[in-house]
Length: 194
Image 1 (spheres, rainbow, N blue to C red):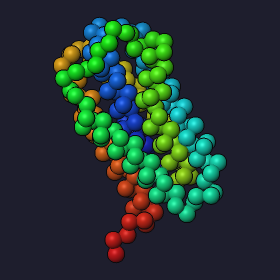
Image 2: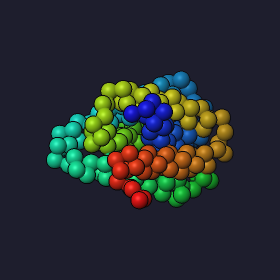
Image 3: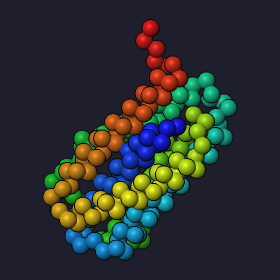
């Protein structure tokens, strides 16, 4: 897989984390280095581990579904991308959803880290269906998520009125995943227009 495609997937997957980090930064008001390290570290770690788990699951069943694996990869990417687009369209930009809790600690952090990385599980499954390796993609996905989460916290801290950015990030990320899914179908000749 070309590095540019992998990077696009990593950025698209990090959009959920960016939106959550943005809202968290807005709610915290003042973001300290500890906040950034905890949230970006947890999100990056889970974002790196979930594709590996999905890949292991997918690789174990790959032989049974080889005839339609490209359609399954497309369906997974379309589902994740469609979900991101739906969330971007239904998100209210005026309300960051502030709660009187530090979401960079304890159970709230763990729940958010898992919730924002479930999409990466589906992408790991897609990689297995396509016979792609997983170690480099998982590392890239984790590092990109770490950086984008840290950026989201900082941007949220700087301006409480930028919550709408998270909405557009979700829309863009979803569109990128849908485009990658369509490209997979085209590369496998599943969409021949002859």
